[in-house]
Image (cartoon, rainbow, N blue to C red; front, side):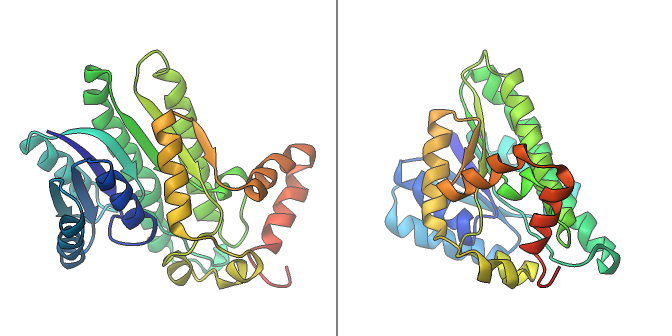
Length: 257
């Protein structure tokens, strides 16, 4: 049975993706940390859509949990023809004050889990010459981010990884898209402690970002930057020094820098 696997499914962008894929008659395999929230989301979606919905709780900062998700999908006979690597989080803190365990966890969730799922599920996609992978990156991946350096670095990883894989598989019918939004309304800001940026840059509804990403994934777009302003933001640094770009970036992340 074909299924769409969505990580970070129970909130924000992930939840919007669930509705979009289900509305187009895609069966879903939902992944998040809370079994209770997954069960509740399953009930909500089943009340609206006539698709099969399954879920598995997992902590994607742990490789063994990532492996468990893959093995569960295989044991159920699922062909993951759509993979949405949405799970991720940030942390706005001066590097010298950062909790190193939290930073490593961020790298594991934002990078390692995404890398693992992209690699293992790509095998079946290529064998069937069918599939779409949608990796949620950020415009943060285009520039260094002082005071939020780990997060920016993880999103640069997501961007570069996606573009490289897209080139490698270009002769197949499998496509990989890296979605790069700016600030959008979700629980991200509360967890990241990045309210300063969100006061400077008005966030957009998560539903708009999800719909944009979904459409671009269906079209097979390699990199999808949401919004004209964000497109200018990622293009403009080409004309300035890295030092200047880093200085401008820092001003959006910390007051008075």
